[in-house]
Image 1 (cartoon, rainbow, N blue to C red):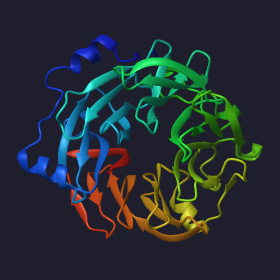
Image 2: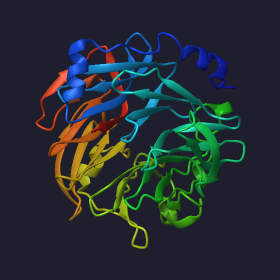
Image 3: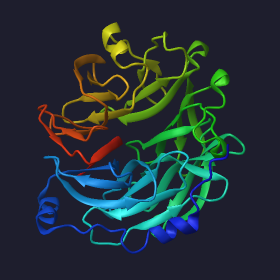
Length: 365
């Protein structure tokens, strides 16, 4: 059955009047004074979609409507703008100001491409890079957009893999780390996974200026169904990645690993009870530079695991229903759930019952 992409004209029309939710005075003051606020996509209980700016205390400071489900939000500290990307296989992204002072802008994917839900700005804020699918050729691409010219698309380069998901810009400002999940999809078949028997996930390092491949890391053949999906960078520059296992549910492969360009790429060992609690699915990965810790979440396992980055050892595990969104906050992590909970590093929670928070939470500081 054919699953149509969102019509671009309908989307651009929807992105006009009424798209901007105004900030009440108290929320505006909180946003201005906060050391950090957080951004996430959501679905409301009435079926509508959007992106929200949250305070550390769990208050909704600002909302932007979306025509369909969003996924991740990336932030440019230079222009103070954020971009929320549609969930795969969506064809839209929305640029918005978290202060609510400017009208949102829209980015529509070109014909033959759709977004994979993630993107990142260059350090100077001039360029936006987005993971995309050349779906007729089953090839991962990085779309390049000019942030200074209404996000005009400048071109693209390959990810040297299938199904790219999250991408990060490393500390040198030049190298992109890209998680190729290895899963072939096509919008004619919705989110169906078309190549599970022949998957070949990889983590690649690419020069963002030239598009040249620097390194490509692959899992061993017996782990070819371990889809590499999400990443974070610790203070040493090590890339931590989380996986989702597409093989038999009875298998329990390692789900978290780390890599550095020019060095070893490997999965880390976890106690079997912790690994089993993740239920073969890591939904988000976040790093706290101040604390030297990595967090991984599993909405399938209702689990949040904290890892000491230097030693690779488990610091703590906790149970939290439908947890997925995580972002660094003080010496710990703020977490959001599909049940509308916002949980601070102390374990205190606020409930926003009308919201189901989506998979990712981004810190805007």
